[in-house]
Image 1 (cartoon, rainbow, N blue to C red):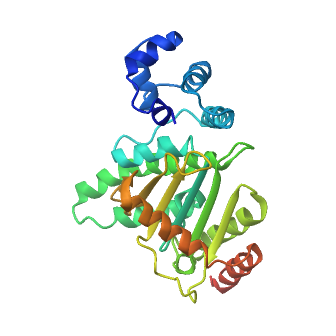
Image 2: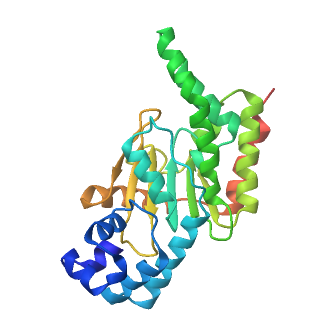
Length: 280
């Protein structure tokens, strides 16, 4: 928002007009999310730029949400794209995801998440490589659980999750862990008003039509400014797309998938059906 409203005006001119900002490097750090943003400086900048009151209020709401986010960072070995994703998530107003093969990380139980991570750890044949992966597993697992705090509180992000029915069928960690995971999803649908979870039935004409099997759309504001799409590649980091026709293509793919979902009650029935099917 700060970059957009500056609209190419030289940073030196902005600093002269908004002296409380201090310096051009400070303005650059603000625009690139490199420092904690002070409310009074953000308001001063947006006021100087002539931003509408509604946008200033949205910026204040964004800053308030960010302050509710715990001050911890992703594990050191995570990709630059994922670190950027996490920074954007903590200030987002809306997050929309589609997952085709597994439950999204924001909605995973600890046992389910650990099982996913351990599956990858068992893959390398060299013992030294397996040990290296195992060393970081606990740290990554704890981060994934803490990251779910973004969904809590009255100012929690609006989280829209569409999960393909196939993700409910694949057991991770055995019957007990899978049952716990599905019950958690059921509870989320029933009791978290800011989380909108739906299951895309396998019989849907759009099943399997997504441009990628794990897409996350970040929207910092109500409109389309500042959007970004993250394409998750399991256990191999991902790719962040923030502009251009490729971004629009993935956004359109998500929008089309959401056209074919049923009601909240339909999703609850489908989750309960798969809970009932678990044996053991």
